[in-house]
Image (tube, rainbow, N blue to C red; front, side, top):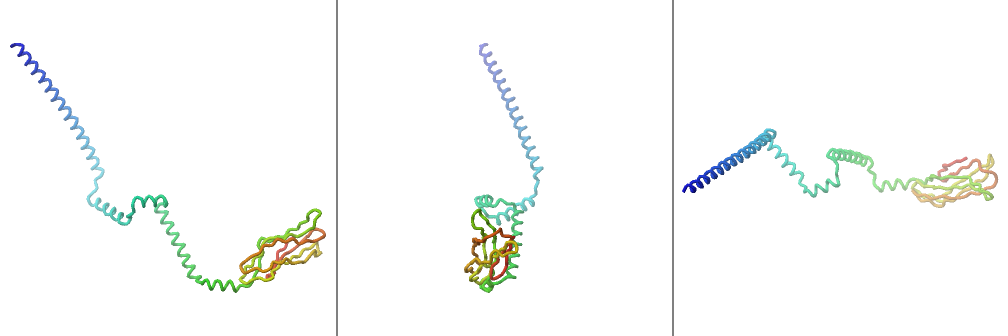
Length: 227
C-alpha cells in the first residue's frame, strides 16, 4: 500500500514538472512571436511613414498611367523590336525630327521657287549649243631611245552642250624654240550632246626636244598649253 502511494506521488511530481516545462515553453514561444510581431509592426510603420501618398496623388498617378497606356498601346514584342532597331533617346529623336522638318521646309521652298517641268528642262538643255571641254586632257613629250619621238595626247573631251558636235577635232601645235615643229589635228568624230569621247594619240615629229606645245578643240577654241 505504501509503495502505491510512492508511485502515485512520483507520477504527480513528474506530471507537475512536465506541466512546468510546457508552460515555460509556451511562454517562450509567445514571447518570441510577440517580438516578431512587434518587429513587423515597426517595419510596417516605417514604410507607411515614408510612403504617405494621399488618395489625390494616387489618383493623379493612375490617370497619368491610363493616359500613357491609351497612347502607347504596343505589345512587349513591338517595344522590344523598336528598342532593338531604334536605340535613341527621346531627345535624340526629337532633334532628328526637328532637323528633318527644317530640311523639308528648305526643300519645299526650293521647289516653290524652281518649279520647272521635265519638258522645260529638256528644252533648255536641247537649246544649248555644242561646247567641248577638256577633262584630264594631257600632253607629254616622249623621246624613246633609238625610236621616233612623239607627243602623247591623252584624256577626255566632253560635249557639255545640248547639240551634237559634228567632225570634232583637237588642234595640236608644238615648237622647238621659236621654230614650229608641227601643226596638226586629231579627229574626234561625232560627240553627242552631254556626252564625251576618250583621246589617246601620238603625234610624231623629228628633231630636238619640244619646248612648248598647245592643244585646243573646236568649236569653242579653248586651249591648253604646256612647256
